[in-house]
Length: 608
Ligand SMILES: Nc1nc2c(ncn2[C@@H]2O[C@H](COP(=O)(O)OP(=O)(O)O)[C@@H](O)[C@H]2O)c(=O)[nH]1
Ligand SMILES: [Mg+2]
Image (tube, rainbow, N blue to C red; front, side):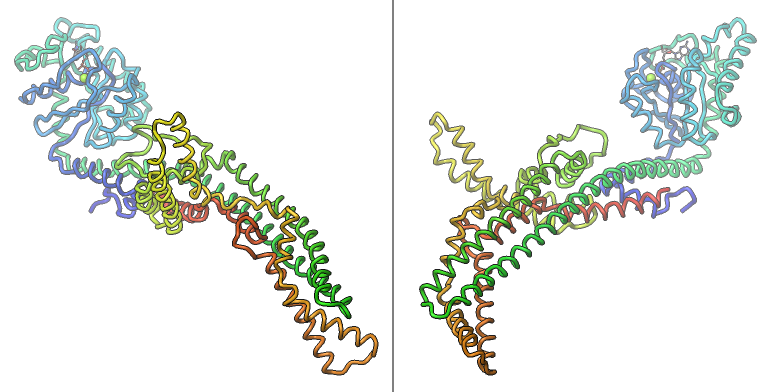
C-alpha cells in the first residue's frame, strides 16, 4: 500500500453514507480501471475543437488502424465516450463540453474521474471561450499529467507553407495569449505543456478514414504533432506513478461525493427528527393531560360514591332493605350523573384536542419531510440506482398521511420493508416491522374478505361498481381502525347510561348489610353515649365494608362492560390514547433517525 491509496477507514465511511450497493459500484469502477495496462488519456474540450481529428492523427502516426467510430464531423454527434489504443496509450474521445448538452457534459466529467492523463484541446480561433473550464480542469488534475493542445494552427492567419516565420510568430502569440488568460501560477506550471498543432492541415483529410501517413509528410515540419507525440510517450513511461495519483483522485472524488450526500441526508434527517420529536412532545403532553383527567376522574368518583353511601348510612337506622336500596340508588344516580357530565366533558374536550393535533400534523410543513422520508424508508428502492438521477420517484400526494400510506402496502411490499429498513439504516427496527406485519395481516384479511364477498355481487346490476366500492370500503375498516383507534364513545353524555350503571350494581348484596349494621350502631351510640372496644371494632369493620363497596361501585362504573354500545370510562380513555399513538412508527423512526445521524456524522468526520 502506498500513500495515495485510500485508507480502509475512508472507504468504510463512504460506504456508510452511500450504501453497500453503490459502494460496490464505486469499487468495481475503480477495479476495472486499475487493471488496465495502458495509460488512459482523456481528450477533453469544446465541440469542434478538433479532438476526434487529433486522435485520428495520433493513431495514424502510431501506425494503428483507425476504428470505425472515429468519424470526423462538424456536428456534435459523439454522444458516447469512445476509446482507441495506439503505442501503449489509450485515447478517450469525449463528446465535447461547452454546455450544449447536460448529458454530454456529464459523460465528459465522468470520464475525467478515471484517467491517468488529460489532453485538453482548444481551437486556436476560440481560445477565450473555454479558459474557465480549463482552470477548473487543472484544479482537478495534476499539472504534470495535463497537456494542452491549441488546435487547427494552420488557420492561425499566415500560411505556414509560404511564410513559416510569420506562422510561427502567430502560433507563439497564441500560446502566450492562452497562458496570459490563466492565473499566474497555473500558467507557470503549464508553460511547457502547451502545444500548438495542426492535426489535419488545411482540413484536407477530413472524413477520409485511413489516409496514407505519407499525406502529412510535407506538413510535419510545422504541424507540431511529433513533439506532442513525444511528450505523450514520455508521459506513458510514468504510468505507475500516474496510476497511483489517479487512485488518490478517484477516492478523493468519491469521498467528496459521499460527504456532500451525507450533509444533504443529515439536513433531511434533522428535519425528520425535529418533526418526530415535536410530535412526540405534543403527544406526551396530551397523554399527560389524559392521565391527569383519568386519575382525577377515578378518585373523584370514588369519593363521591363514598360520600353518598355514608349519607345513606346516617339515615339507615330503622329503614328496611328496600328503602335503603332505593335511597342509595337515587343518591348515587344524582352524584354519578354530575360526575359523568363533568369528566365526560373534560374527556371530550381532550379528544377534540387530539383530533386537532392529528389534523395539524397532516398540514405542518415539517411533517411533509417526515412523511416523505418515512415513505422512502419503507418503500423498496430500485436496485443499483444512484441518487439524484434516473427516473423521478413517484411522489405520493403530500396530504395523505403516513397511516394511509402504510395502509396501502401489499404483503410483498411489507416483506421488502424489512430488508430496506435494515439496509438503509443499518439497524433492525423491530417495532416498525412488527407494526407493519400487523397492518399487512389486517390487509391480507381484508383482501381475502373482499375476494370472498365480491363474487356474491351481481356484475350486471346497475350499481355494481358502487356496491363493489362500498364493499372495498367496508373491508378496509379494520385496517383503518388499527390506526385511528376506537372513536370516542358518545354514550358517556347520555344520562340513560348512568341509570344502567347504577341498576347493575349489587347494592343489596354489597352495601345494604353494612349500612344497616353501621346505621344501627351509630344510633345506639347516640342514644347510650357508650361504646365498648368490641363495638368500636365492629364499627371500623362496617366502615371498611362501605369503603370497599364504594371501591367496587367505582370500578364497575369505570371499567365495566364488554358491550361496545354501553361504553365505559376506561374504554374512552383507551380510545383517546390509541388515537394519540396512531402513528405506530413515531418511536422507531426517531430511534432509527438518531442512529442514522450518528453513522453519517462519524462517516463525514472521517471523510474531512
Ligand atoms: N483546417 C483544419 N481543420 C481541422 C483541423 N482539425 C480539425 N479540423 C476540422 O474541425 C472540425 C471539427 O473537428 P472534430 O475533430 O470533429 O472536432 P471535435 O468535435 O472536437 O471532435 C472538423 O470540420 C475538422 O475537419 C486542423 O488541424 N485543421
Ligand atoms: Mg468529436
